[in-house]
Length: 355
Image 1: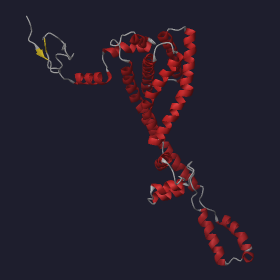
Image 2: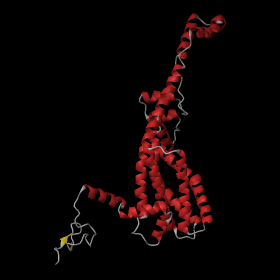
Image 3: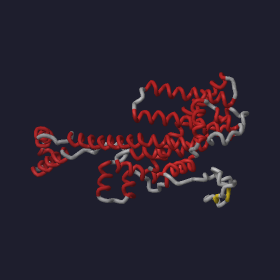
């Protein structure tokens, strides 16, 4: 007995009623919208969070190089695509990291404001003025040589008043800038234009875009008296920078394994390896928010990522363990001491220029 045909609400094609899924588009037959279905569809559509993720997670963590090898062998539907896995795990990592970044920026801003306030207070307190004996000591040579210097009583009274006024005048607080802070404060208070303030800060008359941008950001930093927003921009820029670092890392692999496939093969390995790094970091940061992990455990975890990298290279490129160990050490050295510092400098400049 044939069941009544069903019209798929997604593709409008008819199919047999006993089918659990539409044979034309794959949508579930009885796909009643619930909170669970809505959540699953959202995650699945944007991050491919389905059974393939759970199939891929265990090999990713415990079988170094396995997923990249299987992907190149043609098993590309059984496991999660390397780029999709990288995207999904990196989103989770930066979401967890955002809590620590927000707390750090708030603490840094508070400390910076306290530092500025305490320095200004210390300067004012240290400049309370000279007492009468000190002023008299300064005035004594003038009084004794009054006739020789041709001074009148009014001149001595004026000198006495100037000494008292200057002795109680607050000193300029050094804020580690190359310009006069008091003059800039006066211009800001009077509502002067940014162009006038830039000139006081030392900007040249024929300044180009880069120089003007630098002085603009320096003034912004001076007004806010904090670096929290710079730190926030720094961390916000990291995901973008990683999209350039990851292909660069794959290029380094291509140089060391020039006869082991084309560039796309090394890129697949890099996607899965970075996914592993973000997975471990997500777990570490997540646990640290609940319970502070001892430092020695942190160092063990850091060292374990190098062991994972060594095993992944050995399993994926099928070379002798000694050669794999040697190459993993050199690649790690290049990445940590050359590529990563260069990236940090570029990100820092970008963060200051556009925070």
